[in-house]
Length: 62
Image 1 (spheres, helix red, strand yellow):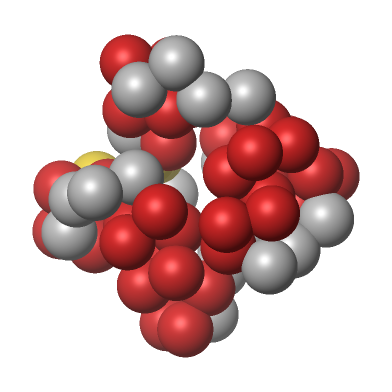
Image 2: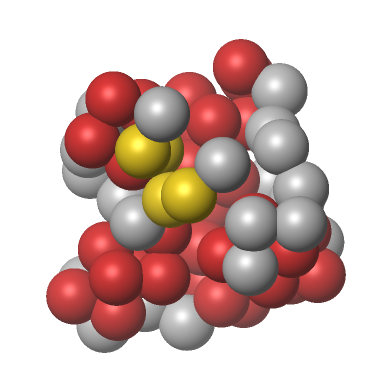
């Protein structure tokens, strides 16, 4: 599944570590999400979307 996590994160000037802290996950999880190697749970998708000030629909390309 493609996503816009890296694009939105960098637009906000946020590091992977900062996003991970806001979403309460490890930085490696953010790395795998950005690379499309990990499909998040609905809760994690929500937490990442909130941290990036967007919606799940805008974050992921289905």
